[in-house]
Image (cartoon, rainbow, N blue to C red):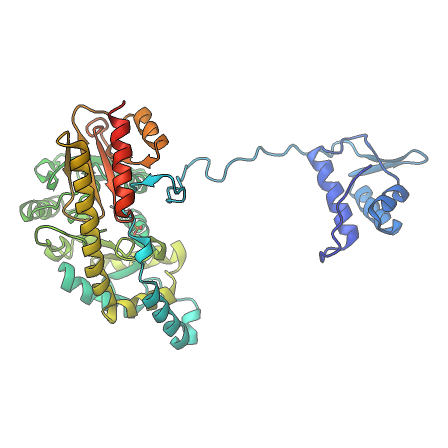
Length: 467
Ligand SMILES: Cc1ncc(COP(=O)(O)O)c(C=O)c1O
């Protein structure tokens, strides 16, 4: 007997439910050509519906050719009604997005760039959010302008001048969905196939991908403990721009000294190219004095990118791109055709958060906490590994680099580390020229407490020294 589940609580008429389910089974080949269907009387009895329901459903299927009827013999599935179903492919089959959130409590995940999520200023955010949702004009619930709320751009230009020496008018700011969208906009704005981007090597693999998807190629410049080795900038190739993370090189952690900054600006003038400065986590500097932005040195040539992902939360998806004036209009258009604009109300909440002084207080508080976590991690590494390792890139940010001598973090070793309940990230994943950093891993600590840090380092040591 043919079993068709009928749901009387649905708004869908019974005839439609019967028709659809038989049709679907025929298309999928579950009911095959030539197969006999139960009589209308049998099926109506089985499904406890009136015979008319089945009669009408069958009539419809007969009219569409899914069924045929032979007088005196019954109703059969028609020929040529099977449609091969495409194989179900996973949603992200071509691009495997790893879900690295720390949801498995047993795994200690040293992923970089994650702030302390439990210390997000929930109460203040909720209070401001409540006020903004109550006070805001009805217009704020409509479409907005692509460059973002003028209030936020105003507050940002003051804040960035004060804290980062960024020299810009609010009109030069485009609010984005995090630094990632700013990078995407830069690549659409400046790059065409066959262009060249000069960039630090290693550098975040996602950023490499964003630039190369335009058909451009990357010209890698090695990085040392001070960031990009600017003496190696190429004169034989004309790049569209040089990409740098000068405040805190990702991943190696260096801060570009003023001499190299000047060399870089001079290079961009000579080659008539732009510089793209990604200032993604400059706020948490624990040692040495902060160095002002490159943008402040040459506002007409430097595109400056910032983000609230590390100082507040990556879930906010709010960042910004500061452009020389002549690029603003094209960028506004690109932003419009990308996602129209970043959510207006969130921008207003953030404006209040900065304007009322909460952001600065939050940064001061978090800096103390992150410094303690960093110091604890360094202590743990030193006591566990004694003098067998080197620690670098720890003066700023939410991660550091652990370097082992004569050791290779192979796929096999990384798997063993993960099986032991720790996740670490090889620098080699972020290199353009492969093979120079295979003894180094990135250890993000911003989101881990002391217990997790200690346990993670012990597990890591145990795997490495039993390999
Ligand atoms: C160097 C660098 N820039 C930008 C980003 C992206 O940040 P956002 O969350 O603002 O898109 C990252 C991510 O961690 C990063 O490492």
